[in-house]
Image (tube, rainbow, N blue to C red; front, side, top):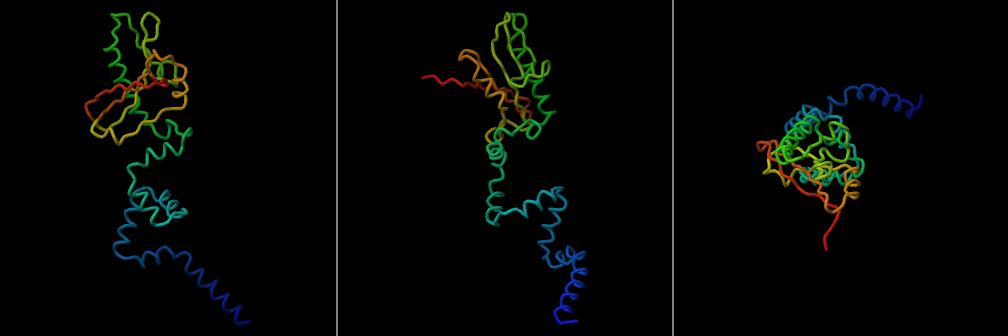
Length: 205
């Protein structure tokens, strides 16, 4: 057997010994601080996702920049995903149902039945994708309204994004300038405060 063959045989033998022990060997080489960091990662429940991130083609400086701007990430994701943003990714069903219940009661108070108004919970009753509520008076549409709830308080309003579906934007284009479409922002962390924002596709000159 040649020296080259012997070297290959030794390498294969060493590799068989090293491969199943590589993780333990790497941990033994870490400093106490690095071991604490590894423990935080392991306990986070995000090990698989963080391993994929570490394997990505990102520099150390790029990862540091990502962490420094972590609060801006939800908005950045919405811009990146564009039309692929959907409720299953970004909406909490329980929060959404609770927020809609609050807005429904609010609208019933603003538009009482005694004055000929009817508040229709369209997303619940007919699975309407373009709005949650439509308010009518004598069968004439008064306004449309969509609820957007958050568990946070109103003091955090500047840093809490909300998302609109493509169907909503397309529906807005069909409305006349005289038909209001409101976003009802529900702040569950501030005693269920509701703020109404009118959205329009029409710009006045």
